[in-house]
Every structure is written in C-alpha cells, then in structure tokens.
Image 1: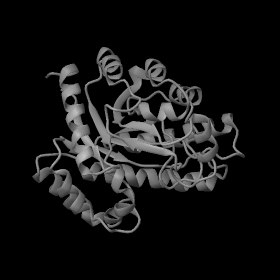
Image 2: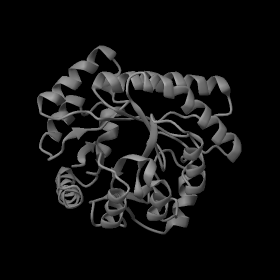
Image 3: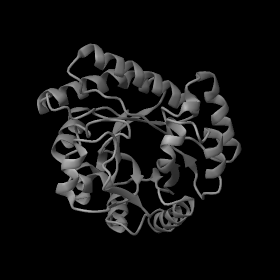
Length: 295
C-alpha cells in the first residue's frame, strides 16, 4: 500500500529560523501521528552539523518510521552562472544528506521567477542544473523529484515553473530514471489552473506527492497573484487547512494516480491550526489511501 509521511509545514519558522522547536521535539511530537515516515527539510537548524545526520535517522527509525523524502529548494534560474553553480553544489550536499538520513527522494525546484529572466532562459538554466545533479543522485540510488511548486517559504518571487505549461515543458526535457515529479495539487490551484488537468499530463512521471488543502482567506486568485509578487514567502491571504475540507478532490486525484500505477509516498503538509488538525488530516488520508491502495 502507498505510505504516508508528515512534513512540519506549520512549524517551519521554529525549526528553521528561531530555533524555538528542536528537530528532536518535532520527531517526538510526530510520533503521535499515524504515519510511516517523516519528510525533512534541508534547512532545519539542527541539520547544520553533518555529524548529527545519522543520529536523527536513528531516532526516527527507533520509532518504527523512516525519512523517505528530503525537501530542498535550489534556485536554478538566476542569470549568473556562478550563482547557479553554488546552487548545484548545495543540491549535491542535500543529496548526500538525503542518503545519510536514509531517504530515496530529494526535491529539486526550478528556481525563482525573476522578472529579468525569460521563459526560455529559465527553463534552460533549470534543465542544465538538474541534469548536473542527476549523476550524483543516481550514484546513491536517490531520485530527484521536482515539485509543481508555489513559493518556498523564504523566497521573494514565486516558482519559475509554477504554471502548468512551463512545468510540463521542463519535465519533458529531462529523461532519466532518477528524475520524477512530486505532485502537489494545491499549488496548481494557486496558479489558477486545474490540478486534475496537470495530473493527467504528468501522471506517469509522478513518484511522490504532497497532500494538503488550500483556502483563500479573502479575495480571489487574481488578488493572490498581485500579492505574491510583492511579498517574501507566502501571501497573507493564503492558508493551508484541514485536508478533505478544501478545494482538492482526493477521490479524483487518488483514482488517477492508482490507474497510472502509483504506489508510493504521500507526504502531508498541514497543522496550521494546531496539531489536532494535522491528526484529523492524517486520519482522512489514511482512510482514503486505504480505499485506493488496500495492500
């Protein structure tokens, strides 16, 4: 059966910025969730020291779980080649981190949608950089997974390949068994597009999935597009919410993935309204996944 992981979306600043939550505290808190694994983020403060990586892996595995996925945000679309090389080197280090943590899937992105970078140049930059990382991943048995992303928490601009046509062109350009898609249906909604249409186009490239539900607190998608270009991180009008109560049709999503042969990790992003909300989302996904992947 497909397996369920958890990602601490609601605790990113405590884990990555101010240190008010330790990674061990998150690992222990997440032990109360009915999940098979934990997705880590490469910039957790407690992962700065490479010597600690095996210890965190052991702590998770001692609880009967694994760390299958590492969430990373390389920025490959900068016009400066030396900047892009630094990002390649960072991604290779994160691939090493993923391997030492016991993971099999390491995220890549295209990069930020800078106003001065054309569509053609941006796609070329991203393809070139991802292809430069693939041999390093392949040598460790790791698959690079590109997400149809909205915006990293700590970026100024939205994802370069946020929109479906750009994302699909980028994915089609890279042909490797060590490269696939981490599908996030909520992010397609934020692009003003249909998540089921995107899934139909890339369903045979999907190897992992992010599960969340999204709500606009006020306004509409057009208002969001205006705000996202002027803010660092997520726009204020945007909210994650309890899975199963938002805009995503999980029966349609899981049905399509099942028909395409998907049987892998789904990682939950939730908890913005408290840990109990995340527990309810986990329960919803467990029941839904059991229906589509009973064994």
